[in-house]
Length: 150
Image (cartoon, rainbow, N blue to C red; front, side):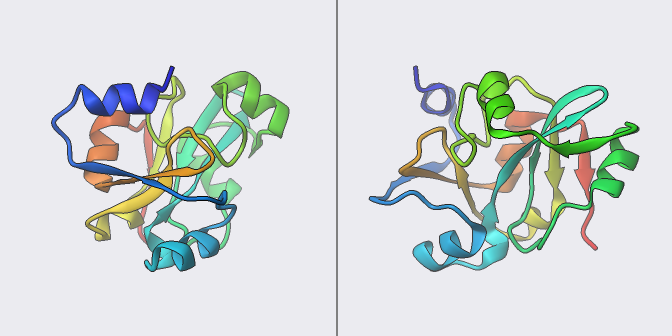
């Protein structure tokens, strides 16, 4: 079942699926492929904490995730990237294919994405990218925390 397509087809939101022949592995690669700013790419990482797993949708313009900050905003004692087996077990998706919507995990959302009309990120399929408004992502995900613009 294509959970992302199912959610979006039931909505009135503006979105676009973009099919591509090769899988995109990085924000820079995505920006080059789509001819957009790297900040418009919206990678989705799964992190493990002492309070469970979270999904972080962040701007590709961030060169790294500040795990000290993540620990602080989530009030957890540790936070680290989930390994590929944990990502598959928790989400049902391979790392890199994890969709921006449709996961049953609490979401941390990067406010840097709000400066763009559209962002590009995971759709649940390796050769398909979702183009969508960041404001819609917030509505669909109801984030538990936000990364602030620096």
